[in-house]
Amino acid sequence: MKNFFLILLFSSFLGLFGCSSLELESISSSKEETQRILSLGLTHEENLIEASKLKTPHMVSVVSLQLTNARDEKIQAELDNIEANKFADLVITSQDKTEFTGPEITNLVKTGILAIESDIQSFYLRGLKDINNGSVSHQLYVSISHNSKAKRHYISANFCDKWNRCDENKKEIFIVSENASNCSNYNCDFKEIFKMNLNSEVLKSSLNKGLIVRFNSENSFNKVSISAPYLIGYFKIVK
Image (cartoon, rainbow, N blue to C red; front, side, top):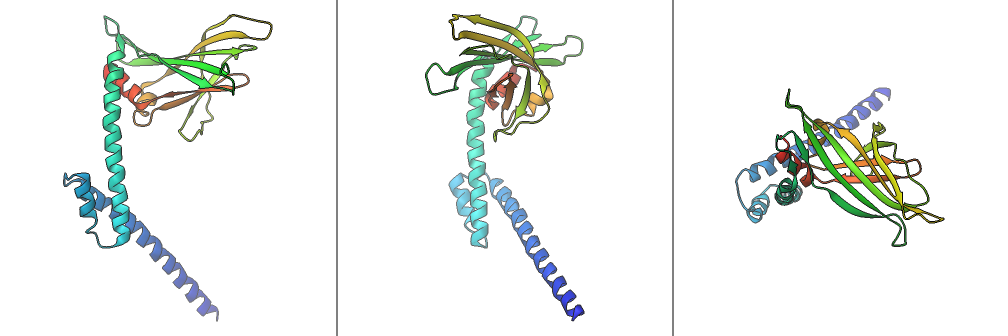
């Protein structure tokens, strides 16, 4: 009886392993078929016709989806490149080509229900080239304008992804200025400007997806999103 139980258990394990192998093989095969069809240089409609000739309905469905995703990614890349060229045209370069200033981007960020409950957020990238070794250091300048009771005192930054997950390693930021105007008994118009250092590796690794940075104050935070086209355009000039 014990031997029978062991044989049954081993057979079940082989069955599960066999199913997993088939799934992995199916995934691998679909990728290979997708690449094969894409290498033919056909139109998207012709690609789908070619996919319809595959052996199983499941394979047809998977490969067709992958072909559509590849088409969409190609279209998005072309649009991003057009936008990147516009940003590149706006990068200011010093006469000796050692200083680069990206275009300033300004966004209105809602923080509450009322119209006045909004932040004006601006940012730009600045690059400095070392004439001795040709390396470029980068700084992200951020300005936050808000109507509040007190300054926010931004103190650190974190990198985040598009799912709003932020890493735990806090980055140092540097206060440039903190100004108040139009003060009443209840609040003031504050403008807080700060900067952080960024290396080329971090920026270049974000060329395909963009870069999201969360800036932390004492009681709140602001997220700055630098788009992929902005970064691509910036690096078209900053070489």
